[in-house]
Image (cartoon, one colour):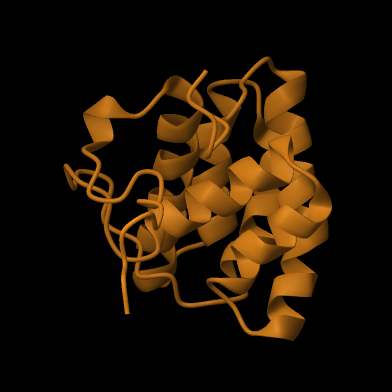
Amino acid sequence: MATHGLPTWPWTDAGTETLPAAESLLLDAMRRWSEAAQRGRPALAAARLTLVAEDLGEAAPWLDAVLRLGDFGLGNPLQPRLTGEEPGLLLAFALSQRSPRREALAGFLRLLPTSAAHAAMVPGLAVGMAFRRRGLLLAHPFRTH
């Protein structure tokens, strides 16, 4: 089977320092959420603390709702490269913010079972809207112009 022409998924093997501001902030909030959850600390509070610095505290409960749906293998906050499902999550959130809903659902379906992917749609859209209201647009994952 030929594999030429298949897309390279956005952010695969990306260094954290190369991410645009919106993706960097979202990744930091996700990683801090994960670190707190692993240590038995309030994960929502950890994500909110990161997002409040950019006046995005309203996005924290929505991000929490998505992250509770799966085991995404998120890295620690100081890890220099994206790991686990981080590229897929950034893709799903970007599609939620900037694409038709069917594409956003497809992004979540890559990461979650069908029912969980559907459950991720409302909070995923809410995260995208909160970022948009603050002027933070996630990069459109399949457009380079």
